[in-house]
Length: 172
Image 1 (cartoon, rainbow, N blue to C red):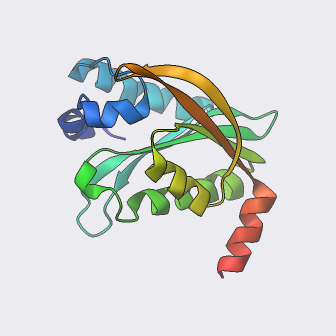
Image 2: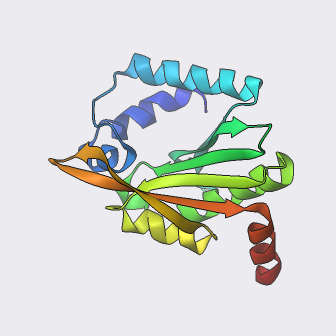
Image 3: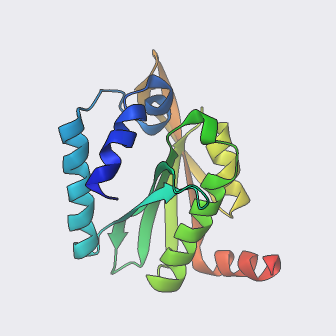
């Protein structure tokens, strides 16, 4: 991520359609997003998180972000998150591709053993992508967030390195 990405991020960040799938819907100003980008640089240097911009390969258009965060070196584990900001760019394989690259980075370069995530049960498109790349549902945290007047559940999923490697071998 670069500070030059912040204008594109701000085109989408405060839209309710995006925020309702990511968590708190409280709007952020441009300076807060710039602070967040700077924080991602610090976390990368510390080895606690790795946040990347997602771009279309052909046009270099900024599409969203993905991250390995909460990296716990002693346990070889991390959490993953991804967001395609523009609704028109969803359903075109960008999220699947970004997730596969992120998993390869996590398992083959950071030597992670386990990568986990949580996703609102009201986001079936994301759940589909996560299952497609190998994640398994391991639980549900009930009524964790209040979104659009109702409580939603967090679906907890994870993937182990050996499961990912088996899937990768079968895809070859």
